[in-house]
Image (cartoon, rainbow, N blue to C red; front, side, top):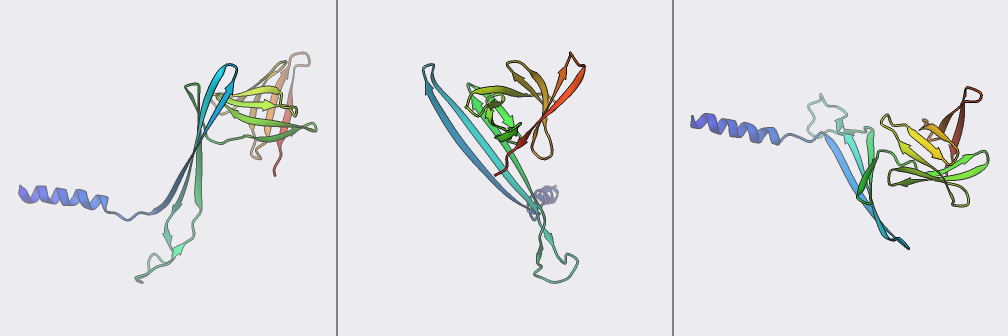
Length: 178
């Protein structure tokens, strides 16, 4: 009985002492923003976690050599951003905050408490983007509500229904890359 228990304990410890087959680098950046205005003080906390995972592979894995060289493998990078403001936490997989161009006008898309806010060139609020359950967005401005999404190039594409013509119109906010 004693050897059985000792054997099980040795087995459990040997399971935990296996070689690591991944390089993992994790970085967390926290930004606290406090805004004071006539309504009082508002505090928002933005936490961004960037994780880089790289699998470890050897060039000649089957050889009998003692010291083996590592083979370069691709690095998988994931970034998760969470924003906490007014007690509400919003988790964002990809931050789409940037400048966009539509018909020669430059718009700014900024991350907000519950989605994004779009500002006109004169810094006036133009619209809001709210994320839906299927990773698309609802675009809402003073005179229009549309369905939106980000394409593979990072552009914001809005699709609107015109009930007078019974047609769908497509507008594309082209991302301005620096």
